[in-house]
Image (cartoon, rainbow, N blue to C red; front, side, top):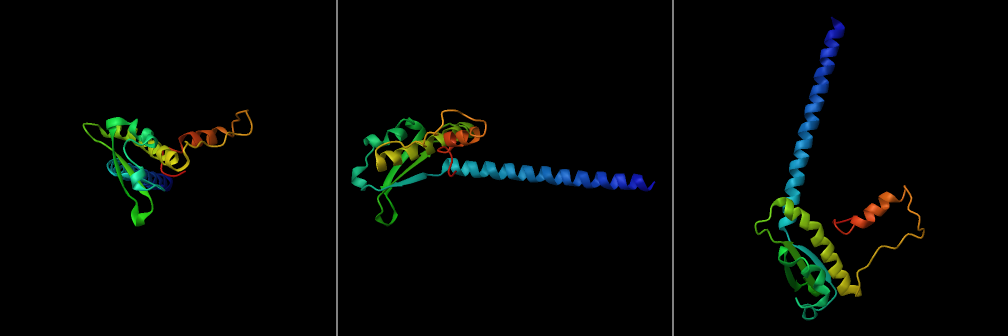
Length: 155
């Protein structure tokens, strides 16, 4: 009789913990979806060390952004405290679903970063090539991170 009560109590504890984990996972998913939705709608700015008169929509350095075409809006304004020029981009939601807009967000971030590098250095910077030509199992995660680092906010 006593082992039966212990077993029932243990099952109750396991069920409670499982319900808590499921509730936490649902809450996390909702927060992530809300954050992503906000990230899609907002302006994503970069600041470059150039006078605003040097930056126009015809500038060759804006090509990475202009390649995205009508999918994004571009805004060019003076940077805060007269520190150069701010270029901002955001995704145009004209009939796009959230999934399509989420697919464009990494491309926008990469284009903004490449635009900034073109204005600042005149070229798109790349990570240093590995000193060894042999790919190793231990180096695969680092290769993956280096390939996708420009898509996200921070590494």
